[in-house]
Length: 159
Length: 67
Image 1: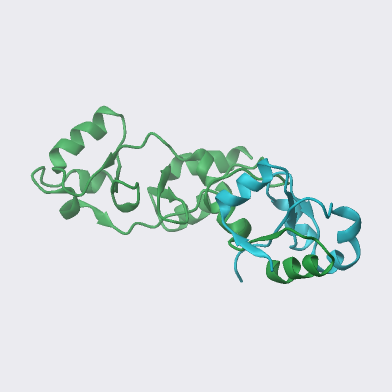
Image 2: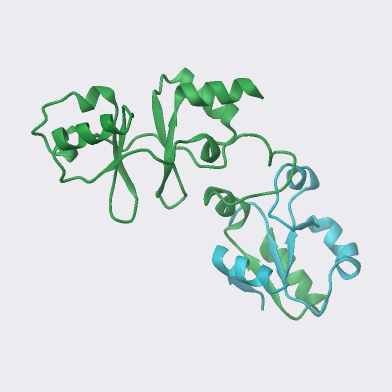
């Protein structure tokens, strides 16, 4: 739709016309602010815990577990140097053999949500699928934070 | 020929005074739009673009995604 609009504007004599081809989806997936009736409604990116512990694939589970518990969390997101999400360890995975490497213990390819999704939709989804927690990622797979089901449900109930 | 741009270029152009135009239906604009964007759905563009937009400034158009 936007290419047609851009070309039509040029035909009207507008000299400098740009087409943001990736559009609103790309903007919102990056967690950037919007205006409108949904702007004040809570979304995944705003409710997710940004201080969630992270780990690298080659770390030892025992070391990571100590760090996670010391930070008051029961989950850790596995990322690379670019913060791209590879996996997730929830409480069950964290209790595995401490000598395992993270990549052996993690749950690979966890379900993720985009930051712009309204929290009410996510709360229903997480409850339905019994998801204890889910990473929130940008469209290029980078970690924004970890959303806990209890936080999603509580936030959805407030509105 | 219109120039295709990415998110960072949008931010830079808007900072320097470009006009931002959402061409989706008005109800979608009402729910969410980029900060500072105006609503000009494709059909209205035919009749209102010249009145609403400044031909001397850059214009950025966008819809939902590449589809």
